[in-house]
Image 1 (spheres, rainbow, N blue to C red):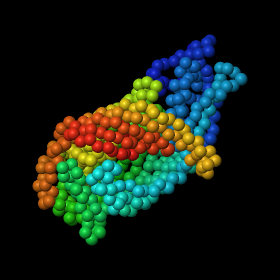
Image 2: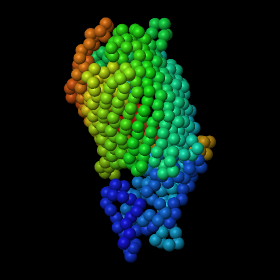
Image 3: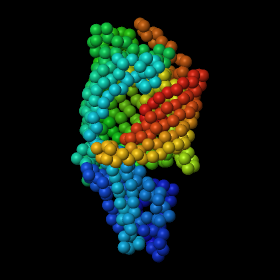
Length: 476
């Protein structure tokens, strides 16, 4: 009797053990693992994602699901446009070759920056009138897969509404076991117009009359990654922050940095635990993810900030039938103390932490809870191959999927910050705080090249507002 050594109880999709009987033909053995199409990527980067090795035994009954699992893990490295996993017959029917065929992406990507500076596209369009002077312009240079070892160089040069300069270099694997990596980084940005308060859940901006800089932010640090198992990752981010604002901002809102300060000097420690067992991370259809984050800003007596936060996130994905899928997430966050600087006082309405249908509102608070649910129907799926019409090999293949969706969300942001009446800063943010918010809606999602997701959604929220919204990035 032999125990299947390619999968543990945690890795087999239906969470069962398998013990093959060598006297029957209900299993086969991997003879060799061949990798094809990797002109740049080092083979060990691909092998790092595989459970299957030479000599691994696979149950015939579970072959399709296990091979698909291996394919998805390689695809989730984001190094390849397409990944195919194929079994190749040998002269001995008990042995098969495992062939990994990949088509590499284009790894040098100069990306044009033409982005609104607001929280999302909808705020920029509906509240800021799509003003061109609120657009950031510049270039991001991504050099992925440096040296063929999944290392990444990131450089940002940006002007416009926010002047931003960033540089980082990620080395995912420093040790021979490919478990430990680092990412040093440095960033600086400044603004001549900034949001200095929230009024009726809308950010209020002030612009310097003489084009003077109102805010400077500097940050440098290093991120440590530890990934011993396939689906589990530990990340520790150690950073130093030094920020300054103009006297005008400190006068209008002394809580911007607290106590009327014009500067903010502190060390930030952030630990992230992430267990990610989704099939395709950019737009998952099966699997689950659990992430928790602990963050401490300020650890000594000589710093200008002392704030603690903890958040936890769980997402689940099911295939309901041939073309129907369910996606849902539950997230909660808590932070202390009660009085926090305005720049870090964020509840619902930022990035993906929002109840759909409330995209136009910034609902500040120390704590929040959020639940988002979607039913997706795959209406279209096709891989377009342009062949020799496209001169660059990596751009000849473009996968396209279209999903029709129905969703229902709910959430609440809790704000127990005492009312502050400073000069010109009296504001009312009670309409949406400390109450249950909900929404329902319909939409269409376009999933395309380089795992980009475009979302078109029409929602009705719990305060009676119905509106069409456009977003970039996955909803859950």
